[in-house]
Length: 465
Image (cartoon, rainbow, N blue to C red; front, side, top):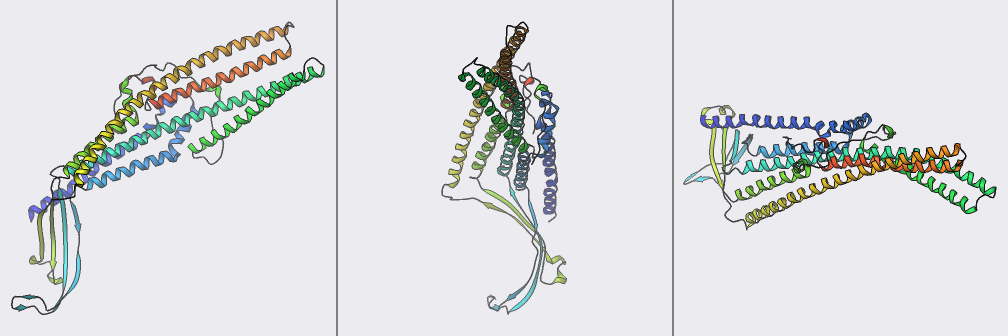
């Protein structure tokens, strides 16, 4: 009995240490939450309003909260599975009164009818001997599932911060477009009024008047569309920031800073930081464990059981030495026939493993494709912005020359208005190209798995998440 108690005590004391190890892992994951936000990267845009909005996003966004809850749920699933590796200790006491009839007989001796109390106070322990390591493999499988969920959470952070920043920049672009559009409408009104005056003086045809009036209505229609787009973007940002009303704070277009010097090539190891790659890698490990588990299911199981406590028919004799209860043993279990279920389950796991390998290879190709696409978009956006800037400078020179011509009487007021209108239209193109340039850096950041683009060629060091 002493040996049994020593074994039982040792197994019981082993539980807290294992749970303590898991608790430390949970604490470390909580500390990584703010790391997922990657504020060091977003601060490179030199926009304090953007940084502040991202911090608020981290605190209030419901998608991020749900992603966190998914991780916590799966952490508990790991604990539940880990509990199967430990011995089960329970107290199953009972108090009852037994009524026996006189039909109990031992040979010629007949036991008369009687009634008596029965007091049982046992501690019951059972433990499945993990000879083949099956329960350990099950825990490892669930741990890999937890890793998949953690990477899904990181992907949520990367996607949400990237999409939010893209909408934020598009809102700034729309604000600037509305500002330019108002100037264009005002200029077109002046041009239309002057054209009407020319028509009244017999200096132009009605077709010229109608053409200018038509252009004015088109400009007003464009402004209506821009105002509608502005409302959509404002509502979208409100959802990100869990705002029920109000106008989200944003910086002015003129304060936006371009990110320059981003590498135009990358090291292939950058793919290893993408959440989808890490998810597929963990999935291969998970199903690999499941295949091994399916093989172990073909082997016999052994369960140690034991019971120690008190059993008496008289409450006054409950603590006497002869009322002590003790039994122990081993229960072997082996399925002699299961209708082919276990072999089918093993083949199922093998097929799933092959499917996971294919998904892993596909994740690599998808990563390469998205990064190459992101780099191509960044290069094009960079060139387009440079060319639109050059075109705007040339139009600015044309506008100044037109003013000089007017000063010497070689150009009219209408020529000035047309030149200024052309300048504003090219300015809209430059604004669009500048925002597209910034959004292309966000798309590339998202494609490489949330890595600082200035360290894109730095070898990836995998973190213990």
